[in-house]
Image (cartoon, rainbow over all chains, first blue to last red; front, side, top):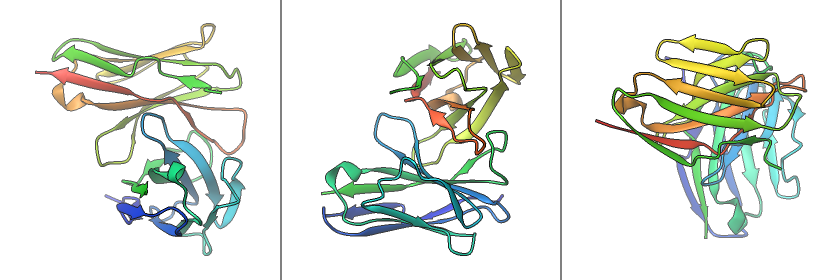
Length: 115
Length: 113
């Protein structure tokens, strides 16, 4: 069964360091999402890609976060510099097309701890 | 502002009984609602959804009810099984063309044998 792959699964870093997360969506899925889930809260959308284009990054802290999906397949989310408040689970999801009626499939996430 | 709220952080039920998870929303533009289930160390998985043109959708042991006037939806699980123990997230979409999901905080369901 096709799955969304994410790496690393866990990342511990010190504040002010740079971190990067990788996501490989299900093959053929045009839409890719990055969510952040803080402990005790639901996932919050950070950025949404349609192929290689960003269609929603309204909640992405652009002073320190960046995301790319250069060839419209896999994607990287970067934080530089990391802050203590960035400690969270970072989830990647993909769907065939954009639109709520298209099921989003989630990866296992990357647990980030900033010390 | 929290547009989707799950006011019960946790719920404990006995195996075989009904589990009822609740969700409230404030944004009148939401027209599609979903429930996701999440096990530890895994990503959320889609469970069931409902469009605002319906007030009920059923899939096996899972039924979602939507009360648009009250801006309230609920997920019923009957009968509950120990394998249903997980975190359940309510999510809503609408008002945009890209299908952005807004999630609630989640409810931890524990089903005791």
